[in-house]
Length: 169
Image (tube, rainbow, N blue to C red; front, side):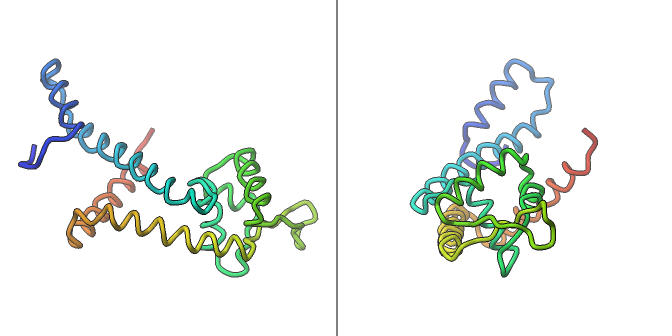
């Protein structure tokens, strides 16, 4: 362990070392912290998005439409595949966002059976404000690291993510 303060993951690792000193717990140290960090930041941004009347899942839908560029329109299938959601899960989110007037569904002019999902002006305003608020919260959390450490961490996490996506299951 480094010379830094101990955290909750270190306590877990110490417990395992006491009862199973034969285990190599390095992976548990990394992924335990990633999991805890993800939960903590997820909770933090959930609170940041609440004043805009949206959850993290709804933020993801609006952000995906926003990132698509003008006219901020995608099919439900495109949204589902980007967000890795079932069509049923997507329908529930779209229903709620449509009731809040943040997006609208309309017939696809190129496919009689298809729909298009488009951000409304209100949706565009909400997502632009929410993304800024979320980034502020994330930037504040990164303030404990130097810019060089933040860049290094992003690079290492990219490599780790790539490695986990390419490994056999």
